[in-house]
Image 1: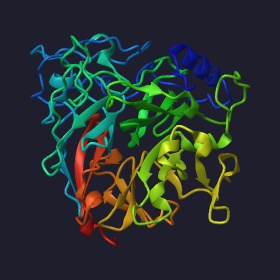
Image 2 (image 1 turned 60 degrees about the horizontal axis):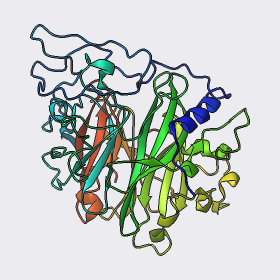
Image 3 (image 1 turned 180 degrees about the vertical axis):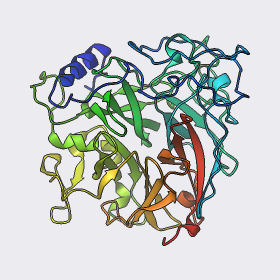
Image 4 (image 1 turned 90 degrees about the vertical axis):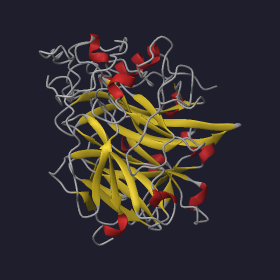
Length: 454
């Protein structure tokens, strides 16, 4: 019988792991992402979204939260650093609109108490609706705990992306509304997956991949997330583990399946018998991306492929595969061991030969494109890179920049499932990307027919 990972069990596990040999990185403030959003104390615009502040909420964070911000002379609350959408017009790619933030068309501060957030991992819920999971999220920087949540969910029925992504209102108890709203908190997007919020133990839990699969009479939603122990220098962080949480009510509630926990390695201490077995190679799957196999390949079409990287932004990419019904059974996963070995057990993955993309690989998303008749991989922590391949194991092409480095400085590209290039014979590819200085998510559009050398 699968058990829900309780707060007590989680504390025991991450507390044990936290004193292991890999707990060497220096943590930032406890309970938050160590980011600048509220800490910079600045206003993003002279015309902020000044609607309802929502509930201050109990965010479960402890320790230093950085600057609490300040009230301007007009009495407007500090709602973070977001500025106007930075214009970007590259050879193939342009910025379209803010998805989140007080300056977005979605007015996520007054409607959902989201002043800043990042990532926007996107997937089709199996019924034609797009779900988006975001990372560390804050609201009013002057409120108790800065209205911090470790992750939130937004939903949309908008299939026309050329003018941005439209998010409907959140309605308490409605699993198809714009976000998860609790009774009595009409303008406050609820946290999905909790975190202990304790420095050097578990500072946050961040979604890195998601997918919907047929389950029973409907569809089940799955989020693969990382438990972050501590933040280090830029691009460096340490994870306790990655795990899969699932939802049978379209993202209203989530439960972590304890059998899917991949404890980060190496581990120097023996763990309690009740905890998952430690595998060195689990450290290669701390951050992830899911993609369905290409539909015209007799072998690949029956599998879900999972691309994994170690914690941080400097590791290589590795590959696993499983049949959809086996997503919660790690024993049924197969791993790419390199061309000489083919698909092997986890313990048999070699360190170098099994890499499908050499380091460095950052937060990534992968999709099958009928337009290109290839798989597409996006990543990047300054500019945005694209690679292509005919098969998940590669060979993957050299990276091509869609967003040039040192221009608008975005990271974490997450492709939108409704992109025409992912649905049919059209070159338009849309993806979310995060801008650190504004700490919000924007939508970008790439015309694949204009990508040089593609």
